[in-house]
Length: 543
Image 1 (cartoon, rainbow, N blue to C red):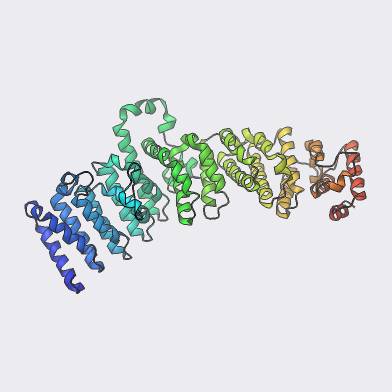
Image 2 (tube, one colour; image 1 turned 90 degrees about the horizontal axis):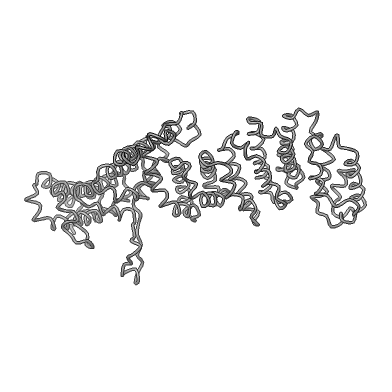
């Protein structure tokens, strides 16, 4: 190897000059030598040599064209164009931006004009499930997903060039149908890019793919366009304001784009949800963002995988890294899927033995309510409150579960003000029942939140005071069930402190109770005073 960097650079520049004026008849007999020269150039350590080498790769592929493609090699042997791409791959992650940009341009030309489209499998780390390499039995057989690294490149110009390369492949490559499903996730990931211009460009790319899909399948989609206008029509921009960018400004994607993404989503949803539980934070966050983007396109068809999606969202609801994106995903699910359908699958986690899972399910349920809107939540309000009345949920002292319950009640009360969801006495009684149990909890923050909820309910019902809520809503008997049976005062010795706190809450909010109900509370106070076992605080409050 020539030790002088300047001389190596001059040699590569001379080769680039020769290729600029070369013809296929001159280059074809020397193709093997030129490929080996460029492989050496792309292994150089000097960044300028790498840049010039990448330009030479693009020039050679342009001159020889498909003569470098798979037709010149057997099925299991790499073609000359693929050898050139493999030589370029190490430089694809060079620390200098100009090197990465030059290599991207060379790879694009090699795949398009040089016929090295099979390099896309290498770039996406494809592994044939029916084949096992012999070397895998003796040494590590690792593959690097170069596309995933480029999609997350720290330089915006590299991400722009990468997206432009993907656009060129999915729209102009003759063999593009073989690779659409492998390249689409990286285009969808660009829809969540931090740069607005990249998001807009990615949206246009998916729309172009959708338009092409509509043209190629016009006969199959004719009935949809004729008889299902709600499927192919655009939505008012006001209804898209709660969608993530760029959809909040560009509106609903066209039908063809939704069909393309839907087809890919059904094949990748299992792997996507599995990545939500990966140990690396970047992987979990990127998977959550890709799921959010996919849900915008899939719409109501996510019902086919609703159980798996809600399960994954529940497990990730408290993950600080992806928590916000996960709740956005839940709201997107609620936009397209009826609330009753989601509750059918979510109720199994709302009744799980693990209280942490219950709390996470309640957080997801709150996001579902927020995404459904006031009118749709009103239809399922009573069922939601019924699910909250599980004995383990009502009497639990778990702080996270109590906070999640109080947060869900606040969401329901806020939505009911818009739709009149608590207008019926039965629903109102169930709401007060759950709120009073939260009010009686040992969790200070949850109890304070429940107090605010009762105060807000008192204002909406136009009651003289919050103390009249119990008697007005008619839920005294259900609340009194938390107390020891009348006539058995010794039961207070073994009763939990929760029962004593519930007695305090009933007396605070029991203004206007019937005489028999008030006499029952007085009897319970006397029984508690006679058995002050570990309940001194509650007895002092009652006194």
